[in-house]
Amino acid sequence: MKYSELPGIKKELSAIYLGTGDYGSGISPCESFKILDRFVALGGTFIDTAHVYGAWATSGYNGGYGNSEKVIGEWLDKTGMRQSIAVGTKGAHPDLGTGVSRMNPEDIDVHITESLQRLRADYIDLYWVHTDEPAIPSRGRPAQGNWLFQLEYTAPGGGVRGGLRARAPGFCRQPDRLVPRQGDPFS
Image (cartoon, rainbow, N blue to C red):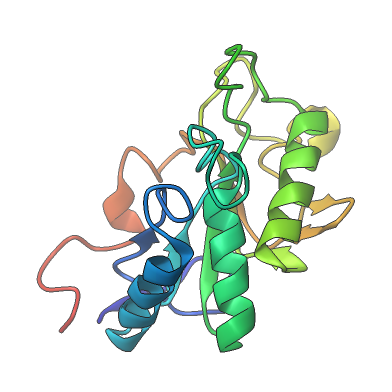
């Protein structure tokens, strides 16, 4: 497996990260644990989840929102791997029922706090938003209204080690700057 680094995250990030959108919804916790175990056995160190994952499955493991995060939190607890596995989660997804935007400091605080609780963690390695709000500036100090791009952001329930908005300059448009897309990631 190849690895890369991101500023603010003191863990090696595997070139392949594991998406977990259906964990606790379409994939049972037991099967999810097996997939997570296999991912780590192959050298994986970066897991992707989101506050909204599972919202479409109200009969899911957490009753909807956060199904995936709850499964990952339990797996991290069971395996004791929190210090070696990087967890990236997302928030501020518009409400699935109403379409109401969640791109504001209050809703992001709630999403981060709920994600930390479900992940059974006191920090999130990488936090980013699911959608972009072009009216919000992507650069500048928080005092200038840029609450979203602040690294070392602290929510009431814990902290975030690094943060990106959905269209962070240089990241989403040119992702090869984060993870080179050349060759075999396992070599």
